Length: 489
Image 1 (spheres, rainbow, N blue to C red):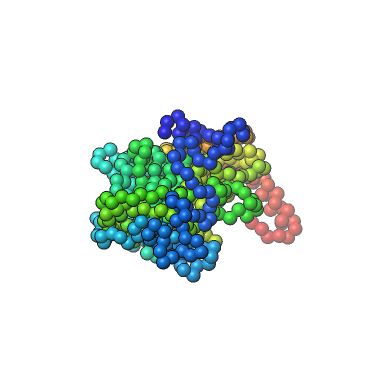
Image 2: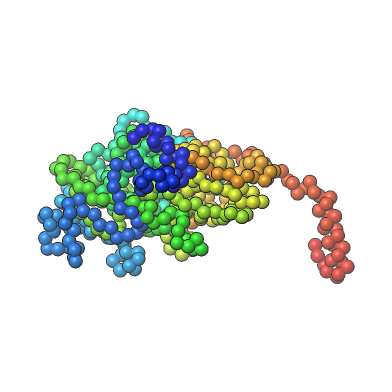
């Protein structure tokens, strides 16, 4: 994969540019992606590496063709409403139960799962925080599992509602090692270096500017075709990701369902030693087996890993005045037990036009109930109040005020802005939640942590400059009220 080709995808304004105005055949995936996929969101898919394998009219026949074993993965309550029922049937060479038993692994001191304030290893913080890019290890072999570092979160996985935010810094592929997150779903955003991900359902190639979702209980392994890799992970407990409702937007816009891509069956039959690492309740366990775990010949269902290219996001916005709330940038959402507040939203800020007239263009000064955790995949993002680099991140808790520095406010308020492109060649994202976050020891003590300089928010008192004029208006108002017999202040 050439460096120049990878940069082309980062510099385009939108995926539509790749179609060359219809002069070339359109294509659904990046030209350097080696795999085939199935398109759609929340569909019922099926895939066979050997045609004629999947039984029809039943899921678990007395004998499956080729002597395969039928195994169901059920991710929802059996009695869940049909539209929320998540399951898949896998037809595999050996069932997943064929292993040598579990053993405990040492705790990873840099990961965390309990974010309740009673945990002495997490911190409540009202101050806006930011981190410079975390270093990718240069010594030893550190794969995706060992490279996970937890920064913040809320709740606790055994409560079945919560969220954790991690980063991974890896320099090695997962050699004969698989991972299963038994706690929740992973949303993975590579920032540096592509990920070649093998799952039980097939393969996903995920580059910076793309995301993938590997759901609870699904085995996967991560190889690093470009060398060392760094990225972000949002983990959710007790929910699955969904597309946000479109409301008055109608049938199309934001992330369109057909742009989500799912793998096709790809199996390996090989007797060799493998280790499968399970994360359960934030603890790590391991089992050994004598065969490759990616031995699924065919499968069907709606509980399948998938990926999405962020350059395909269809931005919407105001074409008259003022800003629309940032919910218009939501790619995926996950429900909480509060029907009016999501557990997690994944939002992106990608290239778009801003044409609003008579409007203060930068993000307005703001306090809201959400916890906001931002990262930058590539390019520059002008909406932060401090240095913000690709691979870095920032945090603002609910109801803490935030906004741009005075100099940016002053410049944006002095002259009418032109119609401009926002964030060209850039994608920033936000992990947003209705839940209050606490910060982990790892993030709290990191040498990459830096707090925003509050002197950037030293604002002038412009009102006092008009003191005489205002007093004249107020005096006239008092005289009018007195003449009318109104006692006012």
